[in-house]
Picture 1 (tube, rainbow, N blue to C red):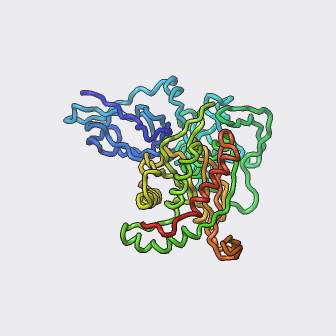
Picture 2 (cartoon, one colour):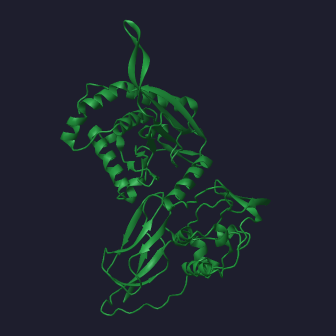
Picture 3 (spheres, helix red, strand yellow):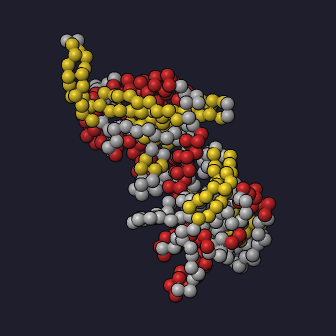
Length: 449
């Protein structure tokens, strides 16, 4: 008999941890090689973890909703004795040192007037309360406020509120036997502010406990929304954001697409949108100004030779994800169209692979899809620039002709570039933006598919 480790897999170069969503197997279950053992989620996509060998699931080390670092042993599989399946004995719990090294903490939703740090930073055990998504869902369904949650005595590990505690509280509340909770109290706590991975503490700041006036509805952020929120704040704290704008006459491009889109769909089985045309113009311009495809590592600038273009994609639930077109400069317009459509459909149907969202070197967001004429997007770290394409509108414009100036109806679009001013100055940012604009304006309306 031998025990084989089941390890939290690495799902991308920038992914350092994953959340266990669901165990499909429990200790004592027989599992086949490549059979799905559990579902996990990262800040990119959800994924399944298969068994690396056939055998019996001996023990699991983490519960659902635990956040586990990549490379950590999450379970053990017993091989070589499949003829006898016995209930596994409780294993020794990981030592406190192991928990400290792993820094495993539950996901914490945003809560008004509450500040979150890791346990090692807390001044005392009452400063932080961690709540699993299951507990928060029960609280939302039963109308239990955050003040009531804070007042509960938890029976879980480190005093955490468990599902059992919640059900007991709901039952007691229904019978009127639960203790009264003061809702509008003022508490004085240290304020913990996370700034660029350094923790600063300001003492004696009065914070109003969670209370809402008027007719309101309180909605807890889902896991992806919390991650998006954290990424946006981290990006603002990391990069010196500057945004430049340009007006672009895309009449030739619009007329060409209208002319060929039916034939293109019949021949290729794909609808051609503006996105692959925008990406084509961007990669041509990055080749002229390679600093736009780079990242910052301390005082070093890392220029990325592989042009992997991320495209911000809206999901049906309102969240956002950025699948990446790898080596976009090596694809023609047909290849770009297939990649764009394939990744967009996979994103909206939840079928993206972990590798589909990693390795981006520059990001495009098409805010015009939703009617916006321009935008100031936030940089997708660790990149240094992101471009937004606004809605294409018909406008009366003055155009120059050999016979003189005249007024004509043209298809006009505003484009914007947000860039990291630490390494990209206004001159380079504006020059690159103008280069993309010229690529679009000078689009060859007679080109073949």
